[in-house]
Image (cartoon, rainbow, N blue to C red; front, side, top):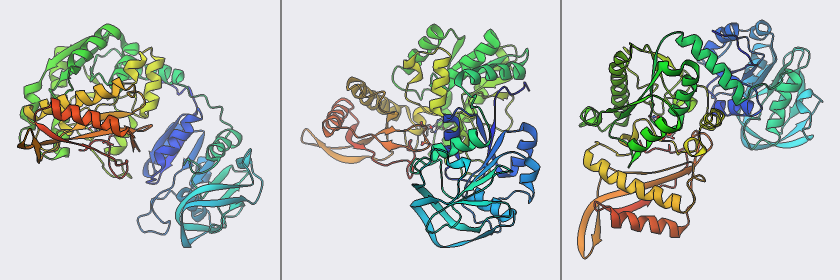
Length: 514
Ligand code: XMP
C-alpha cells in the first residue's frame, strides 16, 4: 500500500449514535479521520499509526456485561493524544482507576458547563456555555494524574485532562451543533493538543486515491457499474484518472429507471466525461428476478446479485477484468450494518453482494459522505449540474414501488415522478431540495372523478433537506405549490386518484419508503 501522505485521526466507535458526526466535524476541520469499531481498534492502531485518537460515546454503561471495552493499559500502549467523548471518557476514567457511577438523574439535552480549570482545550471558549448531554453514567472522580476541567450541575467531572500525557475526556458531545463552541473544542484538541496541521483537502484525497487505485489494480483491468448518479460517476472518474482506458464502464438499464434517464446517462457519461460506457439492456432479467417479491430486503438482495452476475458476464468480455469499481459511500456502509451499528437497509452494493462474487472491489469513496463526494467531483472537473443531481438509489424504482414490482406500476410511478420533478425545477427549487421523488403504495383507495367512482392508486411525494442522508427534514412547499402538483398528477396520470405528501423526518423515518 502506498505511504499515507496526510495525517490520520482514528475514531474508535463504541456504537455511538453520533459517531459519524464526529467524523464529519473532524474532516470539516481539514483533518482526515476514519472510524474503527472498538474490537478492531488495537489492530488498526498498530497498522495505521494515527496521530490522535477519539473515543466515541456509546449506549452502554462501563459496568454492563457486554460493554465494549479496550485493554486496561491501552492508553500507555498507544502513546498518542486521546479525546474520550461521553462513554469514551467514562471508559478512560474506569480503566485508569477513576470513579464512575450511575448518575442520580439521567442528563439528556441541554446543560450548562462551567470551566473549573484552565486547559489548552478551552482556548477561545467562554467560561460558561450550553452543551448537549446524553448520558446515564457519570465520572465522580478522575483517575490519578488527571485534573477536573469542567463541571455541570449533574456531572462533577464534565471534562478532565492529563496535560502531560495529552489525554482528555469530555462528558458532553462537542460534535453536536447544540453544543456551543463544540467545533472550537474539537479544533483545540486536534491542533493545540495533538499538534496536527489539518492537511486533508479534496485535492490531496484525489491524489492519494489515484495512487492507491494504481497500487491495487496494477496492470489489471476494471469494470465500473455506472448508474449516472454522482457516486458512481465520481468513482469512475477517479479510477479513469488512475488507470485510463483499462477501465470499462457498464451502465445496466434494469428497467427501474426514471423517465428519459437511460438516454440522459449514456449521453452525459460518453460525451461530457469521456468514459468508455457500454449499455446493457437487462429490463426483462430484473423484472423476472423481482416477480412475486414484496419484501424490500429481498428486492435489494436480488437486485444486488443480478448486478454482479451481469458485471461478471461483461467482465469476461473485457479481457477478464478482475476488479469491480463501485461508488459505495459511507452511509451505504453504515446503514447496511457494521459490528456495532444495526442494519437499517442492506444497500444493494454492500450487504446485497453475493458471497461467491468473482471480483475484487475498488471503492475509493467508501469513507466519504455525499457532500464530500460532491466536492471531489468538482475537483475532478465534473459539471455542477452533474454533481448536484439528486441522489437516486441503485435499486431504482424497485424500492419506490412498494410491494411487487410490475411494468404497469413502474409506468404509473415514472409519470408521476416526472411531473413532481418538473414542477420543482420550474419553481427553481431543485437545488434547494436535497432529494425529491414519488413513491407508489401497493394499495388503492376510493375516489370520485366526473361523477364516477374510482378505485385507484395514491402517489406519495417525498422531498427532503439533508447534508449527508444520515438525517433529513421534509421540505416546506407552499400550499399552492402542493395543490398544483397534486392537480397535475391526478389529471395527467390516469391510474392515480390521490396524492399525499410525506412530512416525517429521518429519523424516525428513512428517506426512501422501502
Ligand atoms: P434512506 O432511505 O436509507 O436513504 O434514508 C438514504 C440515501 O440512500 C439512498 N438509498 C440507497 N442507495 N442503494 C443505494 O445505492 C440502496 O439500496 C439504497 N437505499 C437508499 C436513498 O435514496 C437516500 O439518498
